[in-house]
Amino acid sequence: MTPKTLKDIINYGATTYGEQAAYRYKVRKEIAKKTYLEVQRDSMAVSRMVEKLGMKGRHIAILGTTTYEWIISFFGVTNSASVAVPIDVQLPVDDICELLERADVEMLIYDELRKDVAAAVKEKCPRIQCLISMQAEEATEGVLSLHRLLEENQGNYDTDIDPEQLCVILFTSGTTGKSKGVMLCHRNLTDNATVLDYKFPVGMVAMTLLPINHVYCLTMDIIKGLYIGVTSCINDSIMRVQKNMKLFQPEMVLLVPLVIESIYAKLKAAGGMMPKKMVAKAAFGGNLKYICSGGAYLNPDYVDKFAEYGITILQGYGMTECSPVISSNLPWDSRKGSVGKLLPNCQAKVVDEEIWVKGSSVMMGYYKMPEETAEALEDGWLKTGDLGYVDEDDFIYITGRKKNLIILANGENVSPEEIENQLSVQELIKEILVREKDAVIEAEIFPDYEYAKKKRIKDVKEKLQELIDEYNESTTVYKRIHSLVVRETEFDKTTAKKIKRF
Image: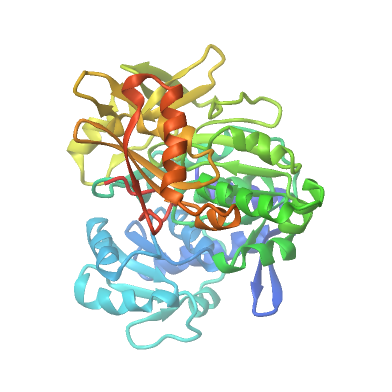
């Protein structure tokens, strides 16, 4: 059976993997386990709950960190032919309320850590008729208990779902401009999760580290994980990642480049005389074999650096508007410097240096934003905004972002990402942003002050200028950096760990 909807994914997992652990997570000092059959049972209970509350077919928001309750709520909503609206748990109250209104949300399932939102919704979101707490043991005035509703709504559930119908509205965490509500249908997500076989063994242990409201985690960690028979271990806190790595001993994790770079710095600092593979075993629990990188561009040098520690990095490329994966490197089919080979359900072409893609994972459009939708889609082709090229074997190479392109007074075009990637390999440079200022190129850098202290670098700005001078000598005249700004603090970032450019 080829899955066409998220309901098919859940049913396939229950039939194929049954009593195998789908999820493991901590409950106080114990480790809880949920099987594939329990995921099916509990998500059906949520679907029954949605219909009983008169919310079938409505827009239902889910707000919280990665938990089992979040996951079954998501599948319960989508598999009742309703629309899930995952919301970034880190956003301020007013921003969340604005997104709830923009997405026409009528029910909110929330984690108690954001009970401030539940309180605000009663005043600011008149459309929302129903509030459900993921943790509350009993219903209180105006708020229902998810646990109690699960108990009350046990039983089989089935309803017809068109693979082309709206399934999810996901708000982008863009580095510039207003976030857009990306509309994805069941086929978008299902095809993206199932079309490429990584040949990972059934029962492989993974650990979820990325925010679950972002499509990279949602599709590749959660949906694909359930399809290929992964046992996913839920990390309960960013502060306890290393401790949980040792506890769950994952074989695979999904990470964004900023985290990969940070991990490498710590591995290198912890090295000393110990063999690199032993350092990695101590840091990651002993079993880590694969890191899947996505969300932004990763300097390919890190693939070689992690290989020395016995870990394979598989770099991919995607965007929310494509559900999200467009291309991926594979353990047996990769090309250094590329962001992977096109997925089998995806075509690509280059128009004026911009990569356009087409396929069954391309979004339906932006919710209630017809002008932005028309700008992004042309005859079914998604304009990615990324500059680059596709080689004869369908491997994609990214050189920069179209909207970030610096156009100098002499007419030359400069990709800031190209310069950032070249300079970020320097250990003194922790974060860098390149831009145009006064008709020339400026670099703003947040140095690695710990590294500077360790290496006894007294004048950090002077040393950074030396690195820039070396870069300038090796590059063409119009790409040279003419001014330097040194930061004392990190750049502001989106929750996907991308630097906010403007």
